[in-house]
Length: 167
Image (cartoon, rainbow, N blue to C red):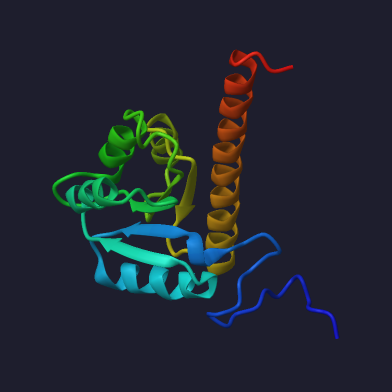
């Protein structure tokens, strides 16, 4: 019996989607609320990816400095440094500007979404987070990011080939 595409597999060892290889994906979850961290972590277990946690904006920046994640799920309201500040700092740095950032927040005013976009957020999820929506957006943004990186690599190789007198 063929798999039902409307119901993705849920076992941790089974990747979702044809081109999804979660074993190579590093996700940084940033939230000051332990229950929110645990919930997002549980939701993402289905993707079989490497999960790292940070409990505030400063920890998030340290975690990104130690190892660039493939995607960041970033709470907005946190002590020491808000998600807006973290996002703006990461998007303003050439080394981290291409890391996809999904703002995850209980704030739901249009101005909050606008501020997230102005800070450079790639997407926005409202709490309580819907599991299917979260998984879909994470997979989509990681795929896009990896395709963009591959495209840049190919363009660099073509430029190098052209500069060496290639066809």
